[in-house]
Length: 179
Image (cartoon, rainbow, N blue to C red; front, side):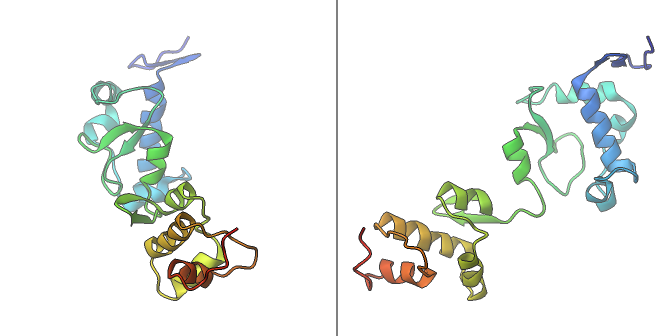
């Protein structure tokens, strides 16, 4: 059996945190890794002590409030480094919301990722109707409000209905939509 000097990786047995530590190092420092442009290529680094000392990394991570090996290691501030005070243990769902390309919206006091909020209320944010309304200057929150409010008021969608019919329905200008 071959042992590495820290003893956390040996044939057939690897500490689960070791693989995560190695993954972070690769994303931050190895230009040949697919994800390097999104991490090291953007200037994201790993805490210098952790780079060369897996034991120090492991000791810190195990002190995190939500430490659980079933969770992911996530940077709290997405543009910040992997360092003390900027990492946490999170679920896949939370981790996937902490991305640069997410569009956050506030709807009825609830802040969330665009796709999740639309899905929660049963609508597809990728629809042509949504894109057309965005082109007309409505915000995602306004568009979602029209969808949700019209449903709350009893609007029954019919194939071919346009977004404007929902607006008219909310305004009380259309009375023949009750199913």
